[in-house]
Image (spheres, rainbow, N blue to C red):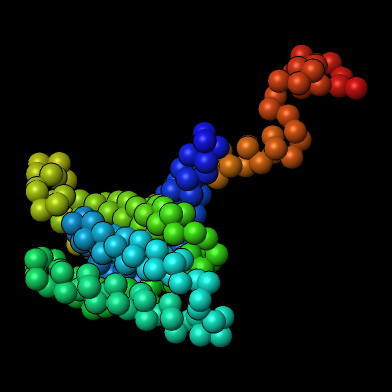
Length: 230
């Protein structure tokens, strides 16, 4: 039971850290750059994409055994388009201002590489529960990433965060950061920082795994104290 729980948790965390769609896999860069001039846009876009990810993953997983391989791509697109239409109508009805801010990037969720990739690589090969967790994890990772990008750009470029002034008497905001060049720069720096933080840990773990030693074996102990390992 513990192993099963760990497996589910690893699927969820995979989308946040190991295979973060924005910072690791560099997928969905179009909305990641275009709508992240405000932090709330990142939250809204991330929530919309997560809804479509989770819904399409579940449906595609449920029908994977009855979907002919030759028509799986049109089936994936139809399912994703259905959930995208639902989220677009919900935003138009209940959050018209956010819907206006996100504009064309909501219907473009249909061709978002993140969603299509998870359908092709995970949902069609795994059961519904795992597919649900995968969609939730990937969506959460995407939301966190674009919200961070949007927060940094909004603070530096507009002097606000979620519309609240935060840089009064601290520094003068630079419009550059809410323009496309500033977006590319901020995103690149955050990608580099994310990979720096998590690649070192991964590299260390990989080396320990390859050697079959975590530093506590007699050979390592002798080496640490200047002795030779036999």
